[in-house]
Length: 211
Image 1 (tube, rainbow, N blue to C red):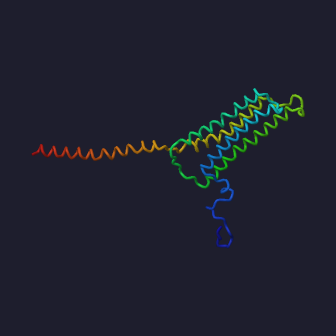
Image 2 (cartoon, rainbow, N blue to C red):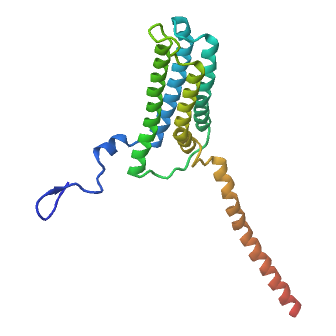
Image 3 (cartoon, rainbow, N blue to C red):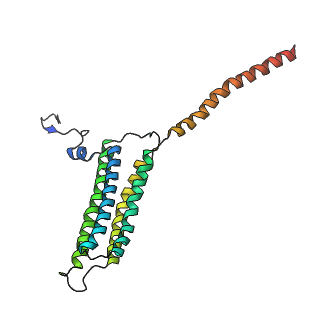
């Protein structure tokens, strides 16, 4: 905060707003959040579609397995990228600005939350529409449920896949890459004295020839 000539308090433009500070997230925090969400989503799907048919949910185990085959591979891919990241060498990453850190936090938190809420609503709707309280013939079909889940995963992947690529794949520099990139420079330095020696020998031979 600062005072203008009239004595009115004004907010410094360079000072981030409280909401921006709250949403700000580092790359390490974003990686942990994505891994935690992928693990929670995979565990939740496995538990629900394994237990629900036995508790009277309107799905048989063959249909539940089909839905698991739609959901699990997406999150397994995210976890696989995170696992590969662990065994990579040192990473060279440019620092994030305050605006980038704030937007990163929103993108990491928002799409998973949207997916979780929408998926929960669809599963509840499917169960209610196929219960004894629903009108006859008004129930949601399993094919429709599978299509809706696929669409929700597609929306999630639009942002999350890019984030996973940026956080776990991009800007990576292994130790072997650094060592290999240093070799050409070393060779040039080694070649320069050799060239000077060759030039000196040539001059000495020319002098002897003139004599």
